[in-house]
Amino acid sequence: MILKSILNIFKESKNHFEGEETSEEVILLIRRHPFFILLRLFFFFILVLIPIAIGLAFPSFIYSHKILNLFLFVSSIWYLFIWSAIFYALTMYTLDVWIVTDRRIIDSTQHGFFNRTISELHITRIQDISVQTSGVIQTFLKFGDLQVQTAGTEEKFKFFQIPHPEKIKDEIMRLASTKL
Amino acid sequence: MNYTDFISTKLILYVAVLIVLLGYWVFNFIILYHLARFGVGTQPKKIAAIFFLGLVCLFFVSTVLFAGLDLNSLKDQLLDLLKLFFNTTYSL
Image (tube, rainbow over all chains, first blue to last red):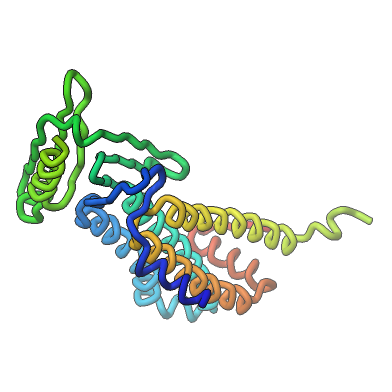
């Protein structure tokens, strides 16, 4: 029973977030395009290969100096730190999120551990939305920036490097028009 | 009784390892805490689960490899390597 309820967290956890109002519905949960996290993961992949490359390049040195156990231990420590670094990057990527609900847009930016900025904008205050896709990579991978203009001289609300910005713009415009 | 009798190189090594381990686990706990506490949707929970499982496995492997180290010959091995790489004689 307990195991089942724990496993349900991974399947049925709704898109609840801190500060959610009663009967507020999450329409869109947007993160940056996976390209950015894959780029970082590629860098970590190169770091993963270093002990393997050393082991393959200098096997006779390792055996002749009888440091195989030491080499394996140091490699395991290296992998432990890389594992943590990978998931630190994944944590920052996952927590950097834009939430579009049926009432508002919430921008939650994670700057590091215990350092977050949360800003929100009510759907009814949206005046104009613009999408910018610039460069070859953005065009081919279909991601870009989205700017939401509010009334007056207030700062624009920006979504950076999000996938399919046109579709998201249409969805926000649809929500805004139903609220008017 | 002189204090150097019980403050041996091995003891210093063990204390240093313990401090590093403590810092490392605190760092990992903070990652798990952030994913579980602030994550929206199922994705952060899945990432937290994979992270924790991998961490336990890797830590187990590291512990087994640490147990396989001969700490008495470790000092000589390190001195040999330092001598080899930097062509200098060190004494610990």
